[in-house]
Length: 306
Image 1 (cartoon, one colour):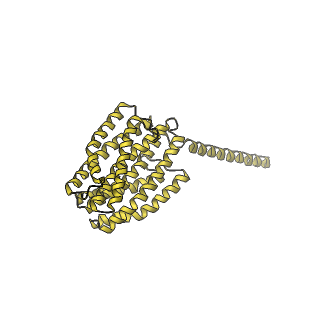
Image 2: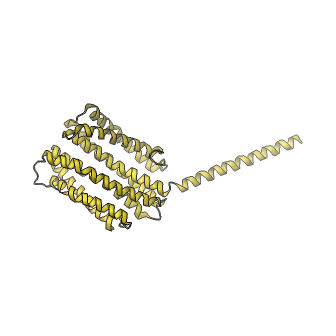
């Protein structure tokens, strides 16, 4: 009888092991299949998109320090901006309860984040040198001017990958919303990119190239703003229907009307130099434009969570 009982116990043990293994496999398969929720996709698209802006904001802050415009304030801002970029980059990879970010599971996106980590490992030390030295040399301006764009480009690729996943996953019922979140988020970056380009022109660094880039950047900002409001088939924008978001885009448009003449002046081939007053005006007016655009992105993120 003992032998029979022993065999029965072994048999039951095997059945239990198979059951538990199957349950674990089923649970893990369901978890992977479910992926991030719509609300989580909204946060991921918002914050990965915000990273693009931060690459340009810290570059702009370094240029303002180089031009001796509120150096102390911009050094403090630079420390915050670069610290936030670093924290968010880690959060995108590993997840962050503080930032409401789920971890990235896609091996394709993780490989892209590896590329960004590699560029950031070379860029961040220069930022820290500026913060510790409390000044920006011509050599550092050249490094920032050269390396901020690869960082932006690779971050933008990551956002595109997240957008594709969002369209397949939690936001598959509203693919136009994924594109809207991406491009409204990109607008934040463009406010800082055109500010940086204007300041590079003012500093006298590769003036003609930066004038051309500035023209392209402000033209894209203006076109995207119109597309967010009323749609743009080429950009994949369906237009915005909720009245509260349209009202917020109206606020952005009002600030853009004030800001545009500054960057148009900077991009004009006839402009031979930019005086300190215009630099200070840009330094003062770019942040309200960024802030109000950021509010609009937050509204789109809430739409994604519905």
